[in-house]
Image (cartoon, rainbow, N blue to C red):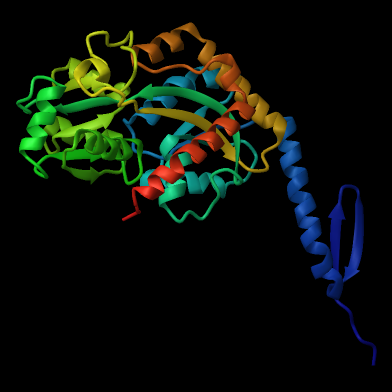
Length: 346
């Protein structure tokens, strides 16, 4: 009897090989890996040739979302392709960041994260990805010192009176946060520690929804960014007691610093950054970085960002290497503090 042998044909460029089926396992995996690498390399040569998705791991309306929407248009002009903003909130931004970690590393799925998603979450959550090893940094983005904001019905006229009011009403006030481990959450914990006050922290799926409830009076206070606090304050919907920075900002010269308001040294700022999945070709990272630089150099964009009390990174801080080094230094700085505070995901 003649035994029949199954064969499989593998195509590679102009050549073709016919192999016995029992050799298939040895060949197919390396062949597919080679094919995937070839496709990514080929895509890099023509990048970008289709729309790019910017994943914002927070709800629409928050500081990170606001910064992203301001930068998206000039980046679109530079890249020559539409930038689609996709808000994927949950788990203090970890859900959206995780999606990008698992994305094809071709430059078409990018995450706009911040101190919370790319520093503090690593000390709080059991993540299914590595905040450093699974991403390639692109560029540092604007940062913002946080503001101490309250609902307009709070009787205190300034920060000192507000702290006194909190001490007189322990555990009765509520503070909205963008999520467990987010900037407003850590800021709230530090505020309570520094002032010797007690209040309840209420997590939301982003700073935007938390601000909506602050305006509506569902929560009493919030430590958040100027990009969402200032517009509401100027409309008379909330009150701002101070900015957690050493200097007043040009966008809101009427807002005193924490040093001036009676809480010296309470400095809290949130920085933002752009990352792509690990393995993204260097020339693709370079094109994205160039688009960010183009956007941050645009005078209209700079004016819009500074009017929101945002601080722009210097030219030296806008390189992928600078963001990578800065993120690692922030992890070394904050992880011990967060872990010592016993902050856990709920």
